[in-house]
Amino acid sequence: MTDLSKEGDTLGYPAIVPTSSDRFLHNQRIGKILALGERADMPFLYYLLCTREYRNEVLASATGTTVKHTAPSRISAFRLALPPLTTQQRIAEVLRSLDDKIDLNRRMNQTLESMARAIFQSWFVDFDPVVAKAAGRQPFGMSADVAALFPDRFADSGMGPIPSGWVVQTVAAIAARVAIGPFGSRITRDNFVADGVPVIRGNNLGNGFWDDDFVFLTPEKADELRSANARAGDLVFTHRGTLGQVGMIPPQPKHKRYVVSQSQMLLSVDRERISPTLVYHFFCSAVGQEALLAYTCTTGVPAIAQPTTSLKRIEITVPPIMISALFDETVGPLMARQDANRRETETLATLRDTLLPKLMSGELRIRDAEKLVGDRV
Image (cartoon, rainbow, N blue to C red; front, side, top):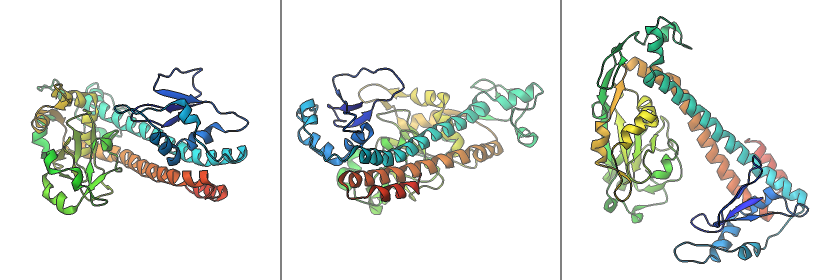
């Protein structure tokens, strides 16, 4: 069974109901389509409903001024060229193999992110290596050389007991630069071009940093907004709208520089004091999120009050630089793998979206598509 949105901003988007539960309920904004098994393959039907031709027809027939919607009769009236069932199944299998690999990358990245966050929690929140050494035990999973970098006692601080020799500092003390995106009057739709310097928006910070789906400015406009330019290793935060979003531009990004939008702010860390990777995971943690969202102003659109000033006030426990470097060495490869998976996912999604209309129209032979996909998954 395929569920289909028939109202709102996602009008026309399909999804296959998973088989992990006996039944689901859907509201009035969702319709469902059941295929006749002897005539139509359900996965094929799903991909057919993903085509531009179907979506254009649904949008063209939509009614309503505030919220667009359609009706089951308009959906069922969509005419299509239906190949034999075995051909449908082969087409769906080609496209599904790409989606399966994309989903595998997504789940692998979730695992990698969980591993990195668990290491941060252990070392910098629970202080497990210090607790173990204070009790006369060897820290779990650490060599003697690595464990030697951690102290064996705690000291009092304004944030409670912290490892001896570590210090509590504000973001202002560890920052090389804190900046905010340009006011709306300085960057408008008229400034956007087909290619150039990418603008980081909320959709680039949904889960870490997504190095794709940008609008662009000319290099000259980006120079004019140089205070809002971000580069590799910089942290970017949403300060208005969907709060709590944070991403770190990877060490080897697609672009030499970026411009943060008016809803974002950026932090360049002083790398002689602390690792950007460590600070990024601090702000991803429950402790860092709580510290950031403590400055939320809920009047009107959710926002961080006095965003750069508030960010600079946040306190973080700073270890000796050798431990920062060790965290980089440990977690860096996990983040690099995540970045590689994201890039592969972008490539696979582009390939899928390219093959979809060609397979549906018969422009591309299934055998050729199978070979093309087989070389990538």
